[in-house]
Image 1: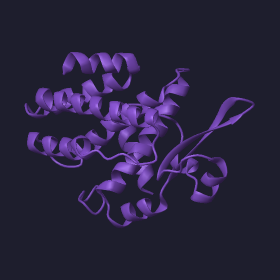
Image 2: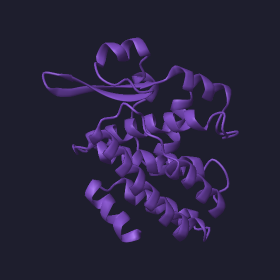
Image 3: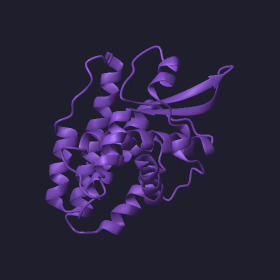
Image 4: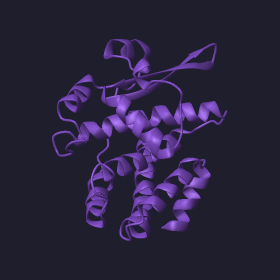
Length: 212
């Protein structure tokens, strides 16, 4: 299943180990719809609770997207036919890994922090599927961040959160591009990404503010 490969790739990139298999937490639309009363987006990480305490996770990703990624393997070719579904899946896998890693260390995580890290992960995952180059990075940033589109049913707070995550990820990616990609310093970029990954939201935003 493509999600398992994505999980292994992100965990290797960031040198983390959740110790769990993401496929064991994937649910279909019928189960998701029983658990959710509000918005039902194509990707959704659900924290199931008992007596007010989070006890389990469930991840929903549109089965049509997963089927498309099975048929059009992004590790072989990433193009208009599979890019959207690849980004959707990476976002779900990113959320899942990050929540599990934070839970293991007893650290709470905000929705903005989750979305910001997922936006960075989407940029890096796409960049590293091929030969990292400045022109590729610039085109990718325009595609991911410059042409960002938001679901029409988002409320004001949700839209503001997604926009903040998008804008900050774009600024961070632009700095990575200028500092590492243009100079072909990819190993140093990976070290920076691992440092950023382990920061909390305030530290991430401070890093971006200093870098931009």
